[in-house]
Length: 322
Image 1 (cartoon, one colour):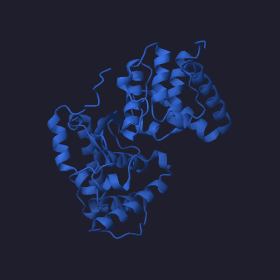
Image 2 (cartoon, rainbow, N blue to C red):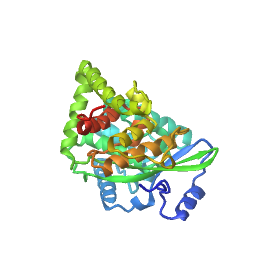
Image 3 (tube, rainbow, N blue to C red):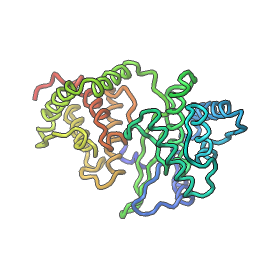
Image 4 (tube, rainbow, N blue to C red):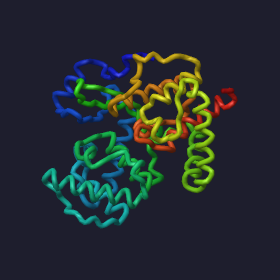
């Protein structure tokens, strides 16, 4: 594993150009698409498909979208789209000219989306701020989710993924971390999807069995990290910074992770993302990860995502003795 993989820009000039166009205050972080992913043919295909779908849906209202970044951030198109698709009557002005009004409008719209689609907070891959600041990844996640709900037969290209860069301005300077995000479903992993369905059913329909599964996974984890003097009793919290996950992988795979390659005591979200992304890379390289994972879900303590990863490890190594 390349210890310098956090230097995700292919050329230093790319970072300089981004910083020239975007002021990042200390303590603030922003996520952008890696320039190398911007020209992905599948990404372009998805963007054109969504633009055509929006324009076809809103043809009678004489609304024409040419750019997802430039035409959706103020909430006008989203407002018309939701009213047209879901017959939703949103209590906001059609046109919001000031940034304050646009932020208020987007807040109402996104709350309506979450309520109508029955989405939990952990499932939202967008925010008022990310849409308002023309974050293409967030905009795509939002549109794909809306389209899948209201237009399930829309033939979106599968396996559309982008490499994202998170840039954080810390007291010690700028720090970057990269991740791969799937915008549309990875349909090549049908077996993994069926496992996901099983976990969905476990979480929603069998909470009594969920506790039993958690207990088995905790015993498995402690069987191995206990050799390092560690003990895990909370899956959602103790794996969020990626440290125990990395140490567990090292124990199971039989190798030592150089401390220079990860943060043993991460002090920021970017450092936690670094650790989790490194762990996911190691799992993918070892053929242990056959489904897409958003590293931010683990950092945010998403229990289901973390348990799915642990289950992959357990399935391979459950026969190992302490």
